[in-house]
Amino acid sequence: MRLNKQKFGLFRNTSFALMGLKEIFTNESSFRTEVYIFIVCQVVFFLLPISMQAKAILSTSTFLPLFAELANSAVERCVDLVTMEHNEKAKAAKDAGSAMVFASFIITGLIWFWTAFFLIF
Image 1 (cartoon, helix red, strand yellow):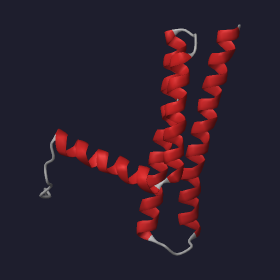
Image 2 (cartoon, helix red, strand yellow; image 1 turned 60 degrees about the vertical axis):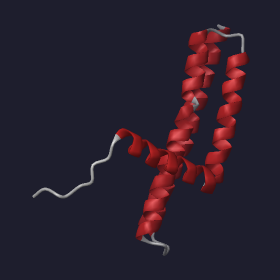
Image 3 (tube, one colour; image 1 turned 135 degrees about the horizontal axis):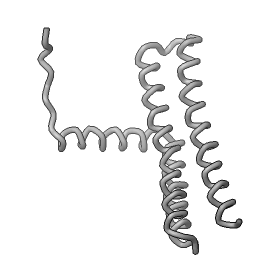
Image 4 (cartoon, rainbow, N blue to C red; image 1 turned 90 degrees about the vertical axis):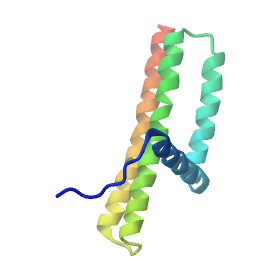
């Protein structure tokens, strides 16, 4: 059985994505903070006297926490949609989303450390 699913085009899907980014940026202070840190890092990486490869590695790695925060926000909204009551499974889902963000910062830090180590030695 085929459902009558609405067809969307590239431009309409892009508008949904931009609305989602706006919503998260407006309502999630942690995401806003990460965006500001991302912008500062991009400026610093541009100004550093290092190779383009190192700049690319450092610059690309700073996207990871942003992606993780977007996914975490989606998880939190889905959990809140299902239940607003205290529930251990809901708490576990939200904690897992937070752990994903934390792990993304650890991985980004390791990438920066690894890149700096190879730049120095």
